Length: 337
Image (cartoon, rainbow, N blue to C red; front, side, top):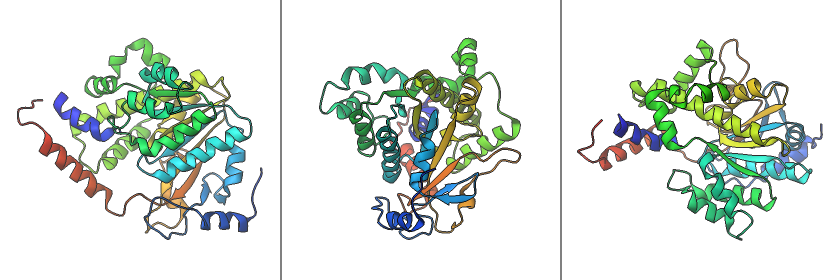
């Protein structure tokens, strides 16, 4: 089992408004780094899911200024997503906010490294990346570097929030019980997901792994995802006293129905939470509503969708299968389960 999971772990890690004409001009001039598709009617637009309308970036920034928790969901490999996250953080800072910035990409155990290096070296971001093995853990440092540098340049608190890979592996193999009853309760994991939400989460995990996820690991993967979400929320709550907190994480983590927000609602009731999903457009989907996943009787999982190009034209599942094939080819023949 450990050899099987080890291969999968590599895969898993991974009020103020502008005139409409000014908004259209801004996005017509957008220098997108991702390329596919090059021309799409939704590119650069922001969709207010609850309001059912588009909104300019200035209006989104204004709303986020009022939030205790700002959750920015990304596609990890998309450079434009990190650039837009940086814009949000710089907007908050330029208006006097000093939020803690919490990263999925750093583990909680990395915090001593971050504190030891920040502020001491001109290349502190690069040193942090090297000593926390960003690239070695599957995070492309060249994509995250400008974002981390911006956080350090504004002297904002920066915190790692993910569980260690060893802990995640243990949860996948043994379940949440490996955390112990006291920690399960303190993280808000003692209340199960509603059955329909759990079913949707299970289907999402299967789909995101293109149907290749081993059936025997799916329940453990769900447990690990929930534990990671609860850990991200825990760090947000612990450091919100700075001036609120911003989360940088994959879009699946910021979902209202099963992600970080449910633990924030349980443990920090009354706090304002806004989540923004940075979304890669698909050529065949030109209406913003088509990008809003829905679970019957549940509210939409995101408050706002911000549309960008995608990073690749090829079918993502074909690429996923190719990655698995390469992993199989590099596996040693005497590995055992």
